[in-house]
Image (cartoon, rainbow, N blue to C red; front, side, top):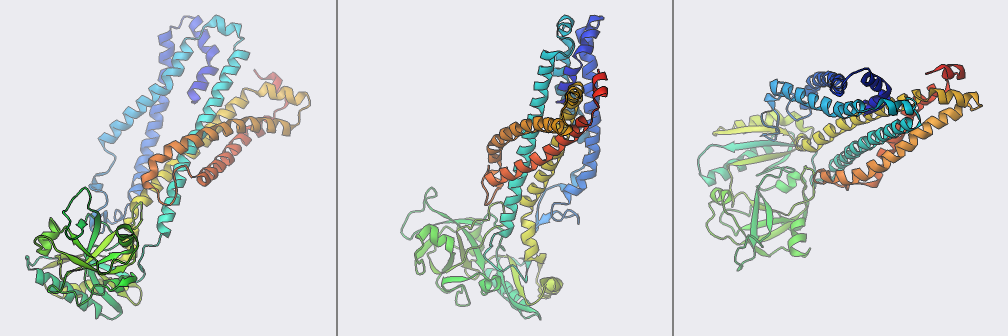
Length: 532
C-alpha cells in the first residue's frame, strides 16, 4: 500500500530519469529491487519472530510443556515433536518473501516507469490532477487497512465469545471432587473376569479414606469418541437410512451417583442388572425428547444394533431386545458444540469391556488421591495398565484445548492486524499531512485556529475510517460464516460483536489520526510557506 503511494509521489523523479535516458526496464528494475530488498528484510524479521514465538504457541497445546502432547491418553497433535524451523520453513519463507516483493513492487514500478515527462510537466509536477489521484489512492489504502483489521478482530471476538459460552455451559454433572483413571486389562477374552475386575477395582477404590463413591464407565464425559449404535423398534426390519443413532456408554453400579447425574424417571443401573437378568437400558433426556416426543419411555423396548466391536466385546449374537428402565439428565461434550447428544447406558455385566475408566468422588481435593487411587488399582495384581490419572476438571479443560487454541491463535493474528492497521493508517495519514504542509500553513496564515486544523485532519481521517468500518462490517458478515463450525452460542456476524470491534477500530484510528493532526496544527505559517 505504501509502495503505491511512494510510486505516485516519485512520479516527477521517475519522469526526469526517463527524460535523461533511463529505459523502462532499468526504472522497473531499480524500483523492484527496492521492493524485494524490503520484502526479504521483512521476511527475515518474521522468521526470527517465528523462532521466538513457536515455543509459546506449542505450549498452548495440553501436555506439550511436559513433552507428551496428549489429551485423555490420545495425541492432541500427532508428531508435535517434529515441529521446528527447518530448511522447508526457510525455503517457504524465502519464496513468500520474494512473491510479496514482486506483487507489492511490480505494479507501482510499472506504473512509475510509464510516466510521461511532458504530461508530468503540464500538471506541474504534483499538480491538481496528480494530487487528486494520490489523495484518492491514500484514501483507498486507509479504507483497506481498516476493513482488514475489522474482519480479523470480528473473527477473534466471535471466537472469544464462543469459548466463554462453552466454558459457562452446564455439562450436566458435578465436576468438582472427581478424579478419573483409565484401566485396561490384558487377561484374555474372559468376559466374566472383565466384569469381576472392574467391580473389584471400584470397590477397592471406594473403601479408601477420603473417597465417597467409585464406579466405572467406558468413556468419561465430556469425551465423546465414536461409540454410536443404531437401534430400531421390535418387529421392524433394520434400515440404516432410517434408524436413529444413539451414543452408547457401558457403566457399573453407582456411576450416576458418583458423577452427580440426576435421575429423572424410573431407576438407574444397579446390582439387579446381572448377566442373567433381562437386558436393561437407560436413556437420557435428549433421547426421550428426540425419539419419544418427551413422553415417558420407561417400559418401552428397543433393539440396539450391537454389531462390530460392541458385539465382539459383549459376546452378543443376533438381535437383543432391551427394556428402557429409566431416564437420566443430559451430559454435554467439551468440543466446539457442547449441545447434548442422545445417549443410552448399558450395564457392564451385560456388555462387558476390557477397558474402562474409573470415576472417583472424593470428600476433599481430588489431587491428593491421584497417587493413592492409582496404587490401589496396581495392588489388585492382575496384568493390566493404569494411565490417564487426572482430575475430571483437568481432563475437561484439556478436551477444550481446540476451542481455546483456535481462539488464542486467531486473537494473536487479530492483534497483529490491529497493530499493523493502526500503523498503516498512521503512516498513510502522516505522509498525507506532510504533503499538505503548505496548505496547513496557508490556512493558519489566513486565520484558522490550531483546533480547526486538528479537526480538519482528524475529520478527514475518520471519514475514511467510517468507510472502512462499513466495508469491513459487510465483509465480516460474509467471512465469519466460515467460522460457523467453531462457534457456540453466538452467530456469525453477531451485531454486538461487530459494534464492539468497530468501536475499538474507531478509537485506534482516531488516535492514529490525532498524532499527524497535532503535528500539522503546530506548523508555523512561515515554515509552511517555505516548504517545497
